[in-house]
Image 1 (cartoon, rainbow, N blue to C red):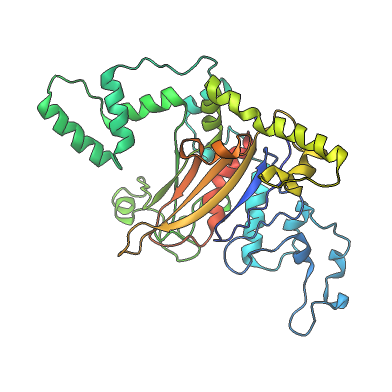
Image 2 (cartoon, rainbow, N blue to C red):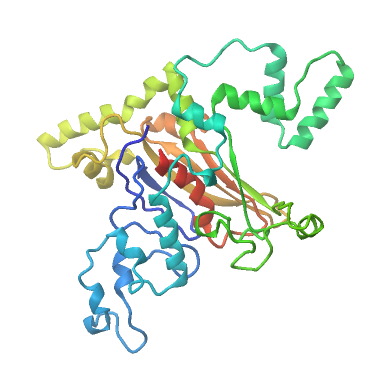
Length: 373
């Protein structure tokens, strides 16, 4: 499990980048930037104290809200005080942060199946099976190598026409097999058909997008079923980080590699005992943020340290179709290992057609799961 302290500086608000997340505390500590998309990017707790307008210069103390001057900078509790927030986007971001504080694995909005929760709470201690029959191996290779369920079933039917006696499982069955073998599965949430927001956190119960007013559900199915069939018009996938870390630690070979961070820190502190600075700055752990977190005990010897990174990409050269992907990098591994493709953990996919207007809502399920750990 993850530890009990956190330092998040996600810089949310539609900007790509990365940040370090040290274990899983439900609060953004320090000057955590929780601003959502729109005009609220990069605001921290100190920024919330300004109340003046064009007639009040920024450096004029009289332009500040007197009741806000006594608020300690960086106190997350101040984010949702009504007299300190005057921007709608910032209020929404504060609502997301507040909901993270109450995150639990039992919350049905997380979307994890009962089987996944059971595996998370009762991790397997034995090594992953190495003996897989050839048919299952073929099905898994086909599942991993094909981009969609339609493609998988098309190829499967072609194989069965050539080998009609082959017991090649369906897409659903091989998907379940992969989840059972690895413990990893994705969770699905509704989103705006124009990619504006995801229906999570404070948007969870909305029936239409607050940005573009597009309905959440297929209106034809909703009307013909007298409101009984609520079919989302668009969905996105999140892959919780907990089961992925469990899968890594099940392998003795992989588990033995995660001691790099702890060993390196011990060596670094020994060097600092004899000098005021390091001779070489070659790794992320040489930064003052991580050094300070180790020194004050926010990171303990057995804690897991993750780095978060998100960026968007245009999938086709001649067609505007954007997709956003975010990943987790395990900093407990050495730099020669943690950035390898097979050791980078995919956190989620945000499909197009447009850039998200509130990216906090798409990141919320992954962060909610992390905090609940």
